[in-house]
Image (cartoon, rainbow, N blue to C red):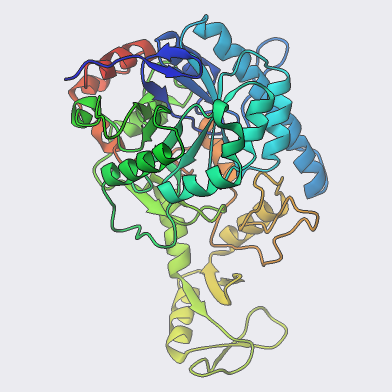
Length: 465
């Protein structure tokens, strides 16, 4: 394999190997600090990161506010405190080696306020800000204000063009790199556009080449592009390394760092990764963000899929084929569905899915009573973790609501990610992963359940495998 050459990233030459940021405590100061200490770029998550008390024990994120607005303010405080704690830990472990980045979601609630709050207290500790899940126009201004580099996450040249023309051209000197995240292969939230088919993946090379050609038009030929999503063995990417058409390229790993000794995920999660098979990671659109996301097929996702399958359209008055009356609840007027859907609904009710729930799209889903109770309780307990949430209809706008009905086909993402990252059952929670996660089971490096340290993993990746 071609030898990896150091690359100038965030003001220092380092290995072109980057740890991908994973939210809600999955990429933390320990894992990112170790990655930087190994000579690469470590990335901790600034999304609801863990913080600690004076004795070093985990500080629980318990919400006491009675309203969504009150809980939202608590969440901001938790987030800033956690981001500061993880930056300090990462800095200590890195010991001056490599670079340290913080990853945030632009669609997380109060992204600007949280970024300011963390960066104000961590000057010199965070070298770069990685940001995606939305169109982060303002991240350039915020990063430049604090003297940090910024790394937008995009899935097409078109997305970068919009960001550059609207904002980034004003902060050219702080653009540390552009992360191309493959929307069909990356874990977590994906940037599929309405014009792209989730079932028809496209090769990343022509898409990244188009991004580089656009960047050269803007005089950014020497700014690194970070390939993220689907990277496992570098030997499979030799044509990219040193390719003059692509220019400087770094590689980001999100899934492989999960299976390291420093990774904070549970042992049950790590062992589950070792058992995955091809096709076990599912590209779905259940996330309350409205984005596609990739996660392991488990009972959690299966229940969401089945929930949406038990769905029929309805009208408030007879309309076209919607002529069959159906009573929702014990009082009020009936709604109308097709006779065929009425038969299906009666079958679901006979099977125990006795609670119809309205969606924002004039459909009903049918769930069991205990599931309906959980959905309603989670919607009521919303703490406003997203800028806009399909599940609860929270919005951080002045109105405090999206203006649409809460969507029971989705879920509370804060709840499930907190559960799985701390003490939840991996089969009953959302388990994000990249689509290559099945390779843990076949890669000889992980034979007999071997779990490397971060240093060992970085050294192994650098060999090409």
